[in-house]
Amino acid sequence: MNGQRPTTASSPAVRKSMQSNKGRDTKPEMAVRRAVHAMGLRYRVSVRPLPEFRRTADLVFRSARVAVFVDGCFWHGCPVHHTVAFTNAGYWADKVVRNRERDGETDRVLTEAGWTAVRVWEHEDPVEAATRIADVVRSRR
Image 1 (tube, helix red, strand yellow):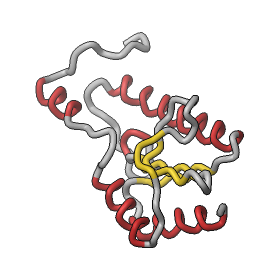
Image 2: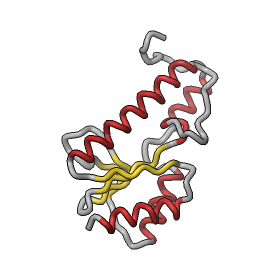
Image 3: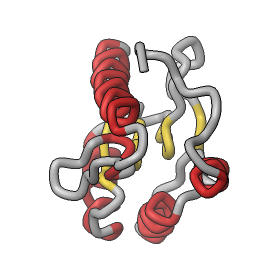
């Protein structure tokens, strides 16, 4: 595929599926947000921690300088649940590699700016993830 993004979906079903993928307010993200909120923490949703850096975190605790990312198992290459795509396998494998590289860069830039990045896999228990997030946020206040 010479490293370029396909211009059309491989089928109408794939096109419909891709169009329905949400950039925010996914079920795992909402579950984590509800659990964090129930612990009394307040946060911003889907904002850039650093205005000049074009990356959006799922939850941002500005005063504590903590950015939370709820990563999808397929999109970010979960070591436990990642599945291999059958159609355009090479493209999707490259996409996951690029996503992981971007995640590492994001964590590095945030750390250099004095922030802490917390990554949560979509399959994690939301209450356990929220407890981990709360611990980080409270330790940085």
